[in-house]
Length: 326
Image (cartoon, rainbow, N blue to C red; front, side, top):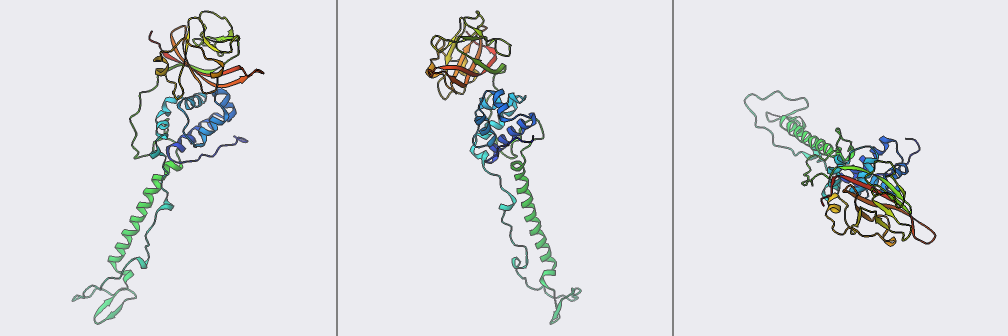
């Protein structure tokens, strides 16, 4: 679209292909980075980095990016895994990198004359006769012509093969619905597909508000506390902390956790409170809802009041189909 500044893809291999595919996907949807940031819940800078190929985005960011553009992120998992493999990110060779041996006369040595026979073959144009033998200029001798032709064909074949190998790096656009994997590259065994999601999206809470994570309402049914028995998460205006509401409990995942269904379903330390000092972007909070569903809340943005206390918190929320085993 006119007027939109596109980030330049850097790097090579699978990481560059992933970045370019993300950028093409956003362009196909007619979204600016700022529009995509609003839809996905991730910052403009984080989305721009994902498109640039400087480093591999997290799986959660890629999911939010692709879902916000209306696609299923499951089809992207293989290329995302591959982009984390250093061997898959090596630059593909180009034709200019090929050292082509010389094919002129300086590359071909002279050979002895063929012995004369009883009936000498017709003398080639430009040949001279010495002591009954015809001396054919070496460039016109059939053997040398064949050798020279074979050498030229061999060099051409190598150049074409290398150029074909570079096509993927130059044009990673797939011909199917799945991102292309470079030919001849061995893939690692893939993990099982992630648990299917019931719903995901952006949730914003202010002090004194509760939300129902089982709700299908666009704003997750946000109302003023105390809400009802179906509400699941409460941002308290008395202690500026995040709590599980009534029949729901929260757990705080440790740093370095990816934030999968299993991370939340297997977590044992539920029933805690997220204090104001721990309310910051990147923090992961699990919630077992009033309907016994497993939910993940990733803090993506925090605004503060004049006291320095959190005044508005934005979460990227995922609620899975599979219920929690109690």
